[in-house]
Image (cartoon, rainbow over all chains, first blue to last red; front, side, top):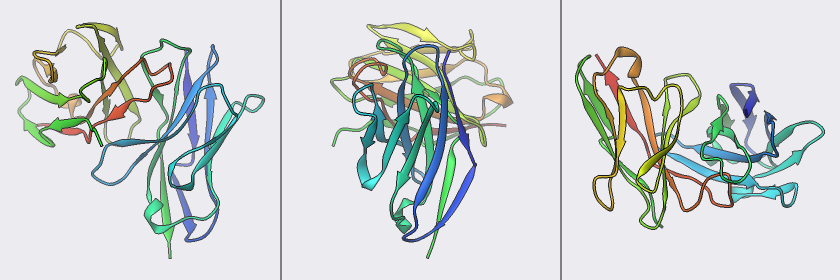
Length: 114
Length: 116
């Protein structure tokens, strides 16, 4: 069984500051990991995914995440926050190839102040 | 850019009534999914659908729920007799391959179901 834990339901940063959103996973098989973003009144959009290739994954809008097996973590970072980054961010996990469901975390709302 | 579309965006229904949520997945995708998010809680998997049949379902997806792909484009979720606890945002998603593979799931904007 797979699960993810997102630490912090809300994270506040200033514009230009580092963004760090935390995600820890639990999986009985090698995991595939995803970060999705949800802007207000919109659906879930994939930011990036880890599928056992490079451990440092680059996504859209300047975001990246690093898969650390020893820490069972997949934290999302962005060097410099922009006002437009304000949204809800979801970490998700699926099992090995053929798994047909994503297991989501509870989400982290990112607030960006000027 | 292709997208998953869901209708309606918001539906209000009375307890005990049947409701059908509609989705148009991306045209060349083969896997279809429904997820839901109760307000303030995590997004939860309901069901996956492949090759015209349910391939996986969660404990939430009981006999009150059903899915159908009535034609080549639509994918529907039916709740036969709605309960107050069915109030949630329902997301439809589709993918070319199973999400455990190289392909991502594309999500629609969701239908907010309110049961009164």
